[in-house]
Image 1: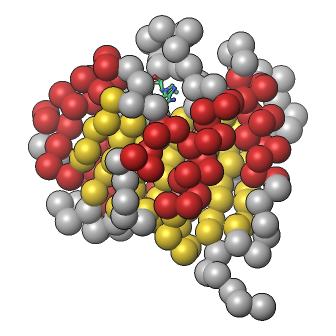
Image 2: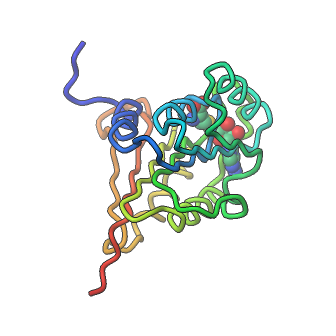
Length: 193
Ligand code: SAM
């Protein structure tokens, strides 16, 4: 059925389709089962590049196999390390960065993103982002620690200088079942005023 207001997952997809064109260089900071990594790999095409990070070997292996099956591995660099270390692996500027915080669906719920490393990583991603580049963060708030992580992400983003960044929050404010919250950050063209 047609809906005027689409949910957080759907709006994230809309941003991805609008923003990711062939040849773009993008980063998935939480690869998990690879759903975003695979979509991004399709959209950037064979001239583009996708970096993907996850601390779990299982996530990297599942995603690698899916990419092989879809003949997309040629444009993807999968790294088994924490996204707080992205600057040790990436030197080029990025068009787009995505985070899906929390734990691996169908995996170990104790292995999840943490506020301290998430904020370090977001700071580094913002440095690596090109002018007009876009960063999306989906926060799940239903699991233990999820609300605290969302709050620390929001506090961090709300302090970004508005001359340098446009920051958006997409949230359903009358739902009782803890829907995920999306944050979007666009790096502005640097002005010299
Ligand atoms: N987008 C993914 C998908 O399509 O399946 C789901 C991602 S899942 C919600 C979050 C992932 O973040 C988990 O796979 C977890 O292992 C990973 N993770 C946790 N801490 C991390 C860290 N410091 N650096 C990178 N990945 C991390």
